[in-house]
Length: 169
Length: 167
Image (cartoon, rainbow over all chains, first blue to last red; front, top):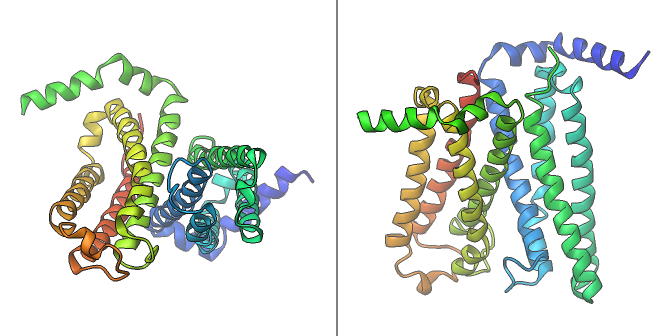
């Protein structure tokens, strides 16, 4: 049995569950879940970018990087939970839309990468507040990490929007 | 308003609008740019609003918080406006006939008005109280109203996609 067959069966099963029917039958639920999902993405993405821009020394230079990270990064984890819940409900509502969609898997791969990157950044600054300021090499590495972070988050948002355009029948 | 309708049809019939309608990748690409920009606008404004409400960054003076965040907000707003404008001209007449689109425009206007009013009235004695964790009522009000308005903007924006067939 190929993975595609498994996903097809899983989609069929999910779409037949009472929860899926309930969500599909109330027309306002999917747009509302998507709105909560986007608002959560806005919080997550902006928090990450504000820290990334501090790594670039573009904004908030008057505060140490560790302080900026402490203000913005911890928010990411509870909000990520909201994203996973709303995202899961959206999958249950329309399983084929995501589970049989390459854009969805690209988005999830990029998300895993962004989570690792953010956790790594948070951990490094908790271990040593001066971690990214110790020498020239570290500062360049910090800017590189910040650039990768911004690009990966943009990739997540693009892939998310693309799900609507690459769904199968 | 004949001038307005003329202007709308001028943009809608432009070569640019044509390519937006006909190129399968251009529209989703600009839409994605729009989502990225909107997310940055809303997320960064939220950080400022939470400071005004006394719920975050309370140990930093208001002007430092705004100075460190609003440049990102404005940059993203310009991108959101440009990308949104392009999406709009691809199908201007249809968008203007969509209640959620019209509501979204008015809500953005209201958010702008709220900001201007805060700057002109609410923030008049800013240096006197900007270090306080709990700010005067007008400032807290401006923050709360802003959060509600931007949530409404995003809600309307998402509903446009459900109430209007693209193309």
